[in-house]
Figure (cartoon, rainbow, N blue to C red):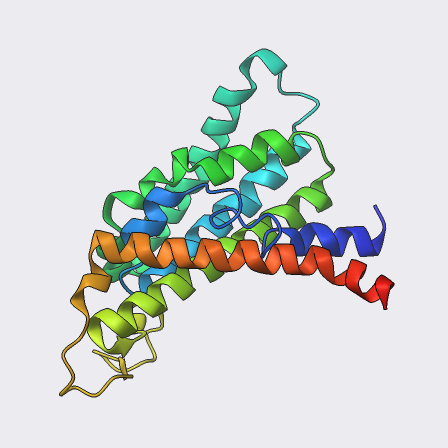
Length: 223
């Protein structure tokens, strides 16, 4: 693969094949944990670690794993890395473990990770699979962070509350007050309907940007 193609593999997951907004995978944790931006960052980083490691291992073993039992093998590999992430989070970021709850161990059955293992890692070399895992992880993390930011700012008036749990050097109770404290927050945004609304708006925005990106070269050619 050329350097330009490798860069395309890395950038693919950010917009064109964004796992949440374009492929519509992993919507359950996306809607559940994005009440705060810090939760989105934490979940995104955990999923990115699992994506990268599982893609690399599955790619390295792709010629050894029998086709008949590939899915159980993929799940076993993914579960191993999820267990590592869960233990690390419990040990070093207990507040994040509490915030993410059951959705952290459920990364094992996240369709994004299993889907990339089946569709990409099992068919491509280790380096390309690593780039795919990083790109998809970045796209997933960005989406969760943007959703969490919108919902937190409108629903609570603050931004990055709880980030002190991820970054110990921040003061306890760290939060950026975005909206005036005297203004009543739009609490609907931190509930399920608010999550679906923001999700729909972001999906529409991603679809528009993708379409715009495809039509731009044609418009330039006409000029």
